[in-house]
Image 1: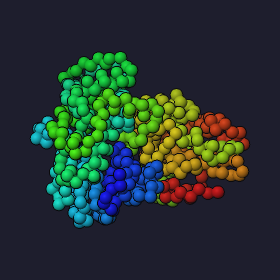
Image 2: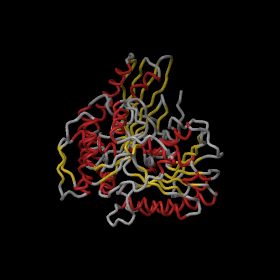
Image 3: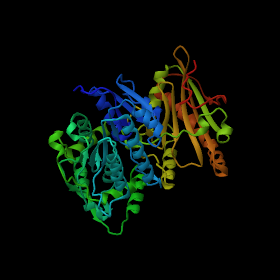
Image 4: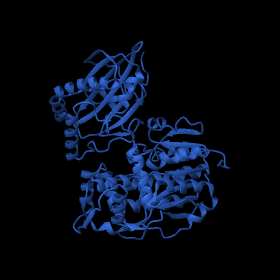
Length: 517
């Protein structure tokens, strides 16, 4: 369907879970799209970034000037940003300020409409969770401006990679017996991500939705206990025994979820708090306006599991958030930026092409593992879990595909230039900041050098003690990793592994993308 209106549609939060799926759908339908996110590196690395109808812009919704530039020329906007971390004490005020900025920017340009995805739950409910209350407040701020705002209120969104689905999947897979809070009997009306996208796009094509507020949900109204049992049946698991316990608090639930699933406690707590509230559609006015096949929970879970098992997840809850490259990776003077950079590197030369060497590198982590010392990696993951970190449980979104910003076990992809460079930023609990870089350089006909380099800036004496206590294990581990990666390439080793130390002129690949011959 070719849209009647000209000019771009702005998607604010284009690299988030919903935004990252909405943008390619809009492009497929012929819309001009301006995708806005806080990290340009994440935007340009998406498979749809080179589409002729896409314009990528970098900006933060808390920066009014950046938002003004992003809205210029757009006739409609999808507002898909919201804080979901209780670790940020000022998230309510941040969301409030961001919504006000959107109102100002949209009004100055004279936009036709804003479409906002909020949450279900009665705003008058005194027990409404802080995050749901914040979503209601954002909706009120957007609707108070001169640009009409269409509000879509949903309950939990189910789909491969969504935080709600991943939390459900890990809990049910790993817990045949569950001691749960009383919220397990709370009514809920889940909705498939496919149907969410259908409603969002439909609001562009149906002018009667301008300025309206709608509840959106799937065809099922059930309890969380019922949802757990449906998942178990679809996944081929035995019936789960659920034992509600009145003394279990949301904080206790969040900590338990942190231990059992990849969802950190900071995200689990607002999700759990939201489970205390009844989230059921009170009207169905949108269904005849935007007709579509509403997938029930059973079919939604089946499709999500199928994509997860085939590792064809299009987007993941871990995609959201801003990349924070350490300052010392972006300037030439490391000591000025943050202190002495500790380094440990090895190189190996192979009778292979860069693409042949790249293939095992791009599959690293997740089910593939880290090629050497797997027991040590697992121990390090358990230590990270005990310290409150992410551990190795996040895995990876796809088995052989990486984007900038992707979570990779307890690392995050900081930069990627296939088939020459992969840079990972450490997100495990360590007394300092660290990156792990793989560089692939052609050195002759059918000859390639693979370099693996770890860089670490310690914080205080604890950081120094951490680095030197692992000095010899790191050397042993990296030599072994390069040898194992070389075996995975399946080509002859010409030289190495040998110690490798780069020149001090190195800068972060986000700034310097030049691959030297």
